[in-house]
Length: 173
Image (cartoon, rainbow, N blue to C red; front, side, top):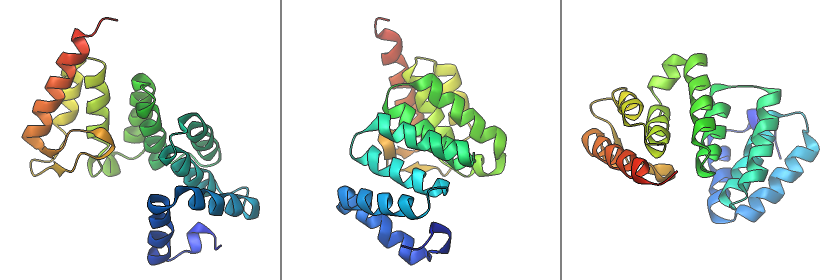
């Protein structure tokens, strides 16, 4: 297998298609990749993807931590935030999303990261912070609801964020 940086876009798409269709085979190929390129942070990031799909969030966290220790990028922090979010570790997810924003404010504004952070704040019952993040969404925002975030246009996302925050506040601590 070629180094990730040497793959074409089509090769990368095909490789990640395997993650959706056969995550165990994807994991096997990533293991082979890491044997060949043990110092490449991308290998650890890809293996974290596989562990996530397989529901092994602790292993995914170990690998994304290794990736970040080798090359801390805004996207790696977002990836780790999504793992933390899946684990219910919302404060940790918010911290990593804050790191993403500080490292790359332009990329932040063009990403789904404000929505991810809004959802984490809502999950903690912090409606004001969640709505502040929603204000960063473009007015023509639309999402299919990836990673369990609210789906729809900006207004429907905001309504769902408010509902989630109310539900979180109503839960006994």
